[in-house]
Image 1 (tube, one colour):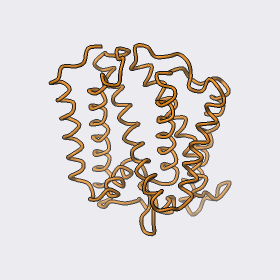
Image 2 (cartoon, one colour):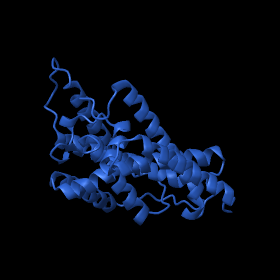
Image 3 (cartoon, rainbow, N blue to C red):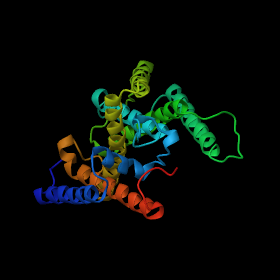
Image 4 (cartoon, rainbow, N blue to C red):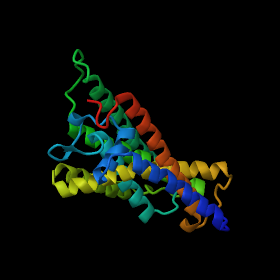
Length: 264
């Protein structure tokens, strides 16, 4: 595919730079302040539902969202590294595992929500360990389907094989995500700082991919790309729109709450 006009590429970069710089200017200072502002757009940030980087400093998102976005990043990283351009959907056995992950995520999420009401006692007492692991399962599912959809949308020569055509591939990914969760449970400040940043990178990455795909479909360039270099413009637009959505959600929530921080 012929690369876009240099002026179009410059316009896409300028659009993303303008949105991101405006967001940086309006949000709390410091690296963790920016991370919290990203989490603020997508997560309730209730402190009792969160792990803490150190005393008095919760992670940017609750345990469930942290698990979901960290595992999504690990899934995308693994998939792009070892299964580039594979876009087939998982075999039936893997789909059953994915369905179980979704059911557990929904069930534990509903149970946790209902426990916010003092008059309600559901099946079991929710805890951050369950939130973390059920969120991780959902992150694997979401990222796996997004990876397949991205490849089917973008590449001329996408492959019909699934990244999970062999059971060992899912096992490797589960071990990788489990390692990430165990690192969260280590309660080591440096490790948790790193994972906190990885979790908010997950939010940006997933949104950027989704909006980049939408841009490609809008301009009718589906299945016309052969290299990542050609994706500069749609990914710039996707990144800018991702930060635009985060900024709008930040503004709405701040207008309603009058402050940064968790709902409770």
